[in-house]
Image (tube, rainbow, N blue to C red; front, top):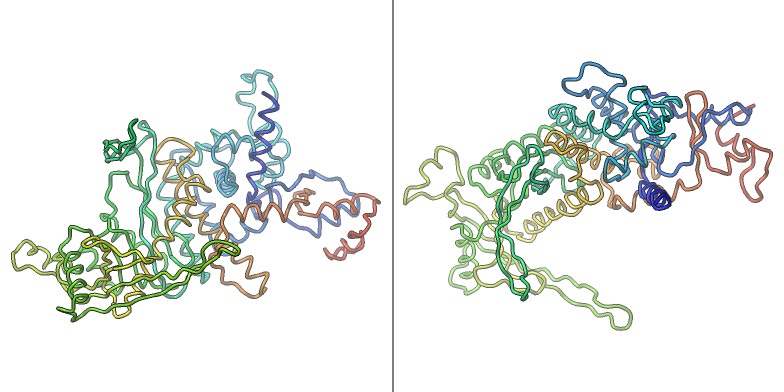
Length: 558
């Protein structure tokens, strides 16, 4: 049993390949490679030496937050209703941010891997005594062995303090982070945003969770499909994502039964506010859940375009399909444009490899008036009259996709206020909405453990979800910022990076596999193992660095 637990702990440490250790002004430990190397060369006493397995892999990440103006907002977070503090809220927030970036799935995993790690706790700000004996003697007599806890805080304490932070404060922090990224030029001047909700299912007794009954198809024992009704509990996280950088720019957590269309105007307004002065929302793409004539008219009045698939039972959808069939038959072709695209794709491998040509055919339809709610509020009040007609809309009808021709009356119809002379351009704009599924929703659930908050309450889930979204955006910008600095030291426009988050963690772990973190007099340095060896001993490593080379590298003169 003991061997299994130790193996599990080692595996968890291996998975946590990218905890963001920091160079923080408030913390006890401040990075200063020069001073630490000089102390090593002069054989001064050391405070601690630890392996860099998943700690201090990104020693500049929190400095990046400080540089772009996010850290000041982080430091203002405090739990609601708490008056007495043994330690401040900032260390808890910092540890929780490390937990999320490290990809630790639960609070128990954080306690096993992160809270017991001396190097991780030192860079957060705890000293050696606090790491060994804890920050308080309270409850020591209740331990079976009466020994020290071996960690400064417990996982439950961490979860309680993070969950107690006000929801409005965490929401403001998320919005502030987006605004600071926009001020750094992360986003293009004109952006396309995708609006999409994702379900976060929870147990029935989860505090504040809503419920909805849905129909689900199941396979019975005889192999036949049957439809049953199931009740699902949980929440919906509605996210607005900028499609080029794949960074969330607005978000809202609601109960699972809520319809996202109620919050469309609020979400777009918040996204516009977060980007104001640095980027302009040019186009909004959303799922068919967000089809609402009045809101679509409001988007049009704000000078933005929209692309939304219409529902099959809507008059405007049927009108667009009928206009396309008339154009194909040649009976009526006014206001219709056909566009076709041929793409060659390689299939198979080796000698059996062959090239397949895939055809996509779309039709641009102008002047549709079948959506009677598309117009100002005053006109929509008369929508139930027999002669009521909405303002003109355009549509793109997908006739063929990748050589698969749609069945009659089942063609996908995209409603838009954009010109449709080049219907493929509008079709491609909506295709960018699919980016929110894998790079954001799926990654947030699988790699960032979105559905595993520190406590089973709505308050805890809200804080957890917004911190996940904030860190996803900040780490994307930070990674590209680092890449830009390597390519051009004067480049200061961070943007998104296509490298997957898991691969990024593995890459950073690989780059830091042979490094150690050394603490001396409240300062720390991250050094290669060979550098540390030649500094603290008279050993010479053949074919490797020498003592004089290390001193010259860090500008140390004895």
